[in-house]
Image 1: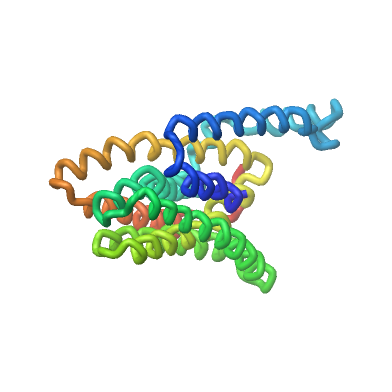
Image 2 (image 1 turned 90 degrees about the vertical axis):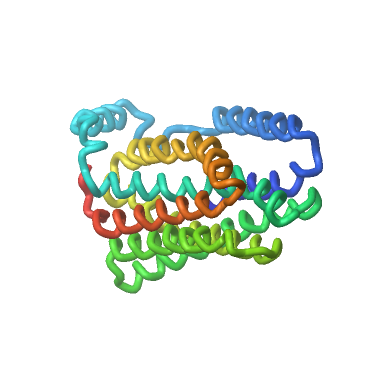
Length: 265
């Protein structure tokens, strides 16, 4: 699922530089409408939930959990914080990489298609990390150790890449460094993003929704904050990438010390 999410970003990086900006919004908007229509026409409740007994069982399970439970466990907050940090780096790359490559490294419209490479790498690595995590669990590794290891790679790796990124002065090397960051970030799919099913096996949909809502905050903050940091530092981008790296490092430590694989909900 996470790997497939990078496909749209890959296509956008390839064709958006060559079309009018408003057309790109129209294309993805129509694709979203088509997807919703297809989903509404094809989705059906699982057999166990389709009958009245299944609905009653589901309602009974939901009544046993109060809303305060979703925000009162450190093992859940470690997931929320890790997701927040992951998205902070992702939004920095998504929103500002083309601008950085253009203004700092002289990338033109044609070479801007290189920004598709990190997303291709992310899609491929997401599948690889998932298989590796399954393999480690199958040979006897504790689930918690695997989740922590994958999250460590998924946060510390991109954090280090972003902290060092301002020192890169070559366009191709810059794309390779960001590709490495995105490839390592994909490990999160087998880390904290999968941890929901461990700690809340019957309520993973709700915990993921809360996590995803919190992790959307960077999408709101990264744009204006990055602009302010660049202006305040007289055109230097080091504070932007250093902040992203620091957030990743901090979240990795919190997740490593507070995460759990024991069901709590």
